[in-house]
Image 1 (cartoon, rainbow, N blue to C red):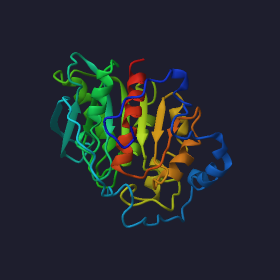
Image 2: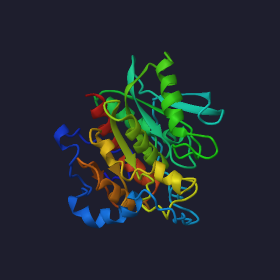
Image 3: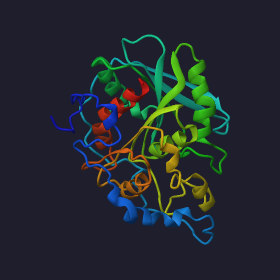
Length: 319
């Protein structure tokens, strides 16, 4: 069965000792990136590059608008979607929507993976017909693996850090959304130790929140096509308000924060962010599990790697 098929069999869980250095159908990031990859980061590490102005990226950057593609056949899922909203002070008083999916047939308190969405998507996008992460989790649980829930909140175009418009998606997730999940007895979720998942803008967000929370609060992080920029001259205004904003919130130079957090990165070999992501991952010690195969910044690629990501998150949450 091809990787483009949705109802693919789930791979058997890997042993823990192979999680950070697994070799599967994809290629593993090697230490050979070393000098060549990290040399491009020098411009990001200086404290005072005062003369640099950001260049405007392409009119339609890959994280800004999802390409048209054939929608895969729908898989019906019994996992219910619970939705609600709250007024968020961290999002400048905006009514903020959220969604939670618990696997069907499971009762009692569950650990949770917080899902951080991409640009021009929202809290329901991961549960829609093109990605259906809740269905992948249901298949994982139905195969006899430990259950967990998924929870997402809408940050609009905030990019998961404090912005000039007064919004801060990261603070909303950490200071409002997680406490709300813990306090809502009907949801029956444990937030003492969480997983993080995100794609594109949300991939950057999951990494940033993981660095802020650290281990052991974060059990594991899985990201697809994280929107990372290594060059302070080449970031879009939608991501950072200024050079100072970029310097304050760039993840380059922050790799040590992930030394004790299991991390899985998946990105297509033709993805716009492939080079920057590979450069960033070269600075991780120990190395992350890094998966790549043919594919771009598309829902089809992201859906194809979800089973591995769900299994990775589930294994680490269950420890």
